Image 1: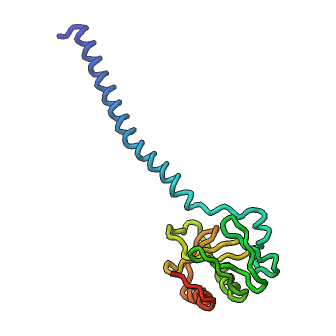
Image 2: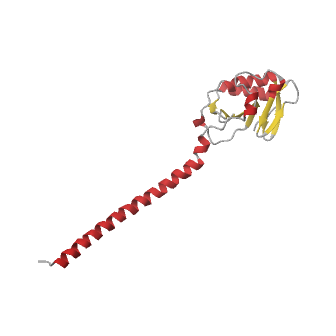
Image 3: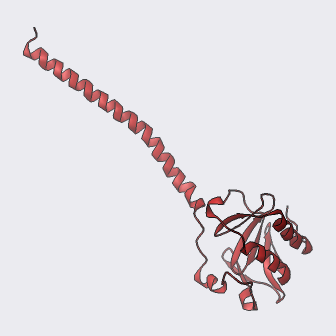
Length: 182
């Protein structure tokens, strides 16, 4: 039979074994959770901001834009691209197309064709892809990115698909105004 000291040693040995087992389990849980937390953190910093809708225009810019009608007066024809304010050069021009760093003013009738197409699209912030637009159509303090190869229009509300008819109509306007998009 065992004496008291041997029994105590056995109890402590078994206790230490349980403690070591618990520590091993905790270490493996931490080893699995740390990379997971890091991945979620990186995802939230890099991907989530790109998925969120862009902030609305400044209050001065939104005062120019009513969002429903085509600009009627010359004062409504102020357009914003980036942070600089531009106005169409003549009264008959009402919109600007930006292609590869060049700005092209287009006539009011052609701008209205593109505007009618773009304002009726159903934009979704979660559908925004990573490819950059080939050109930008700017009117009424609002800028729309267009990509004809991918067939989309993009604005601060999100991204929407363009039908073939819409693409052909917009490309027809660009070709009438001798604007080439690579």
